[in-house]
Image (cartoon, rainbow, N blue to C red; front, side, top):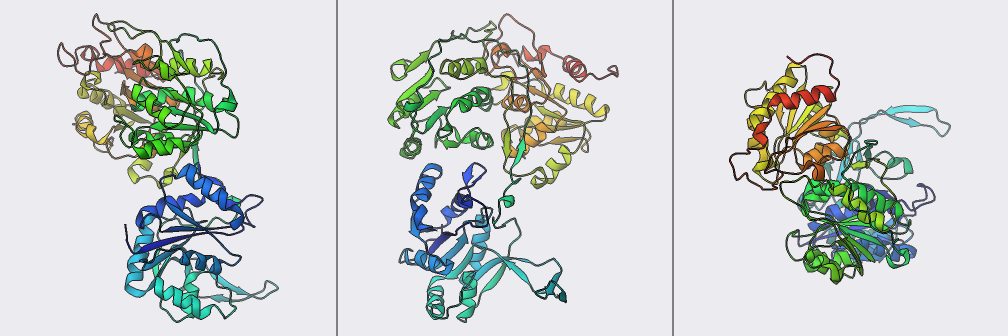
Length: 594
C-alpha cells in the first residue's frame, strides 16, 4: 500500500456509443465492468482514498453494485459533471489531505493491472507525471475531408495513451487552475498537465488495457467451455416430499455452503445447476466456500457471487458475517454437515436453512433431511451427487438431465503458459492424477502409473502428470525413467484455469479417487479411476465415460487415510494391465495390447 496515493475511478460517462445499456454495469466475468479496476487497484492506496466519480442520477446504483460484489472495499462515491475534466476535479476535492500523488483511471478499462499503476507511480515520483501507452504500429494516413489521402504520417515516436495516469497532486491541481479559463476541452489529464507546462513521461504498457466503447468490445472476451451432457448411473438417494420454496421468503437469493474438498464441491454442481434454474431472474445464487475453491466456483456462470471464508475450518470472522449478510439471502442450503456453519449462517441473517440432519443442528434448520449413515466395509450405494440433488428436488427443483455445466475461463488458451498450450495442442494427451489430498491410502503406486504412461507413449501419446505443489514428488516418481520429451511433471505448475484446459483437452485421464478425477469427469472427459479404501458408489466420477478399477475386500471401503494393514494394501492389488485394459476398451482401441 502507498500511504500518499489516492485513486480516482472516472465512471461518470454517458456510454452513448455502447447501446441502450450503461456499459459500466455490463457483466464481465460475472461482475459489473466498473468494479474490475476497483478490485485491481484497491490494495494500492489507503482504505477510503479510492474515489469513484459517477453519474449523479445513478449514484445509488453504483453504491448498491459495490456493496453486493465488493463489500470489503471502502469507496467514496462522488457525483460527476458533464465534462470529464470537471468530474475529475470533483474527485480531486474528495481525496484525503495527506495525498501526495493521484492515479486517474477510466472505469471503462477493466483489464488494467495493479503492476501497471505501480510502474506509473514510480515514474511520477521521478518526473511529476506518467501515463501508460503503447507504441503506434499501424501505418498512419492523413486524409482530406472527402477521404482522399493527403500523405502518410510517420509513426516514429507516436504512442496510444491509456490510463491509469499518475501525477503529483499539487502539480495537477495547479495545472487545473491554469487551464480552467481557457475553454479548451481536454480529453485526458496528461493534456492538462502539458498545457500548463508540466512534464509527463511515457510508461510502456505491455498487456491488454483496451477501453470498452462498443458492445462488441466485450463480446467474446470470456472463453466458455461447454462439455455437453452425460448419462451417469448414480446410486440413488432417498426421495423426500416436495415442498417448494416460497420465493417471497428468499429475498435476494439463496446462499449455499459447499464442502471444502475439491471433489466434494464438484459433486454439488448438478444440484447447484438445478437450483439456479428454479430461481426467479431477480434472485441470485450465492456460494460460501473455502479459499482453495474460489477459482473453480468463480468459473461457473451459474453462480452469481462467491464468498470465500477467511478460515474454512474455524469460526467465521466479522468480515465473513458481513459479506454473507450483505447478500440479503433469505434462504440457505448446507451441503456440508457442519453445525458451526449453520450457526453462523443464522447469525448472518439467513432465516431459512436446509440441509442434512447432522451434528445436532436440526433445530436450526427449516427442513433437516435424514440420510442413511455411512457403513464401513460395505458399498453404501448412495452417491453424494444424488444426495445433493435429492435435497434441492425436495425444495422444488427439477430433475437433473445430465447436462454438464459451462465453465467461464478467466483467459483464453492462447494466454496460458507455453507448456500448457503445447500440451493442449497434442491429439493424444493423457493426464494422470497420481496424488490424493485425502491421504496416502487412496494412492495407487507411482511406479504403476508410470507403467501406464510408458504404454501410452509407445502408442504415440504424451503424458502430463497433474497435481498440487505438495504432490510434485509423487509426480516425479511417475515420470522417472520416461522420455522427457513425452512426459511432463506439471504438479504445482498450473492455476485452476490451466488445469481445466489440460483436462478438457486430454484424450484420457487416469486418476485416484481425487478432486482432479471429479473435475475431469464434470468436464466431460473419459477416464479410469482406481478405488480402494473409499466407496466408488458414493464418490465415483459423475459420468458414464469413466471406468472404475475396484475389487471388494473384507475391509474395504474403510475410509481410512492410511492403511492399517500395510502400505496401501487394497490399492496394491491392481496391476498396470488392469488400467490399460480399461483404457483400451473405453477408447475402442483396435490394436491388441502388446
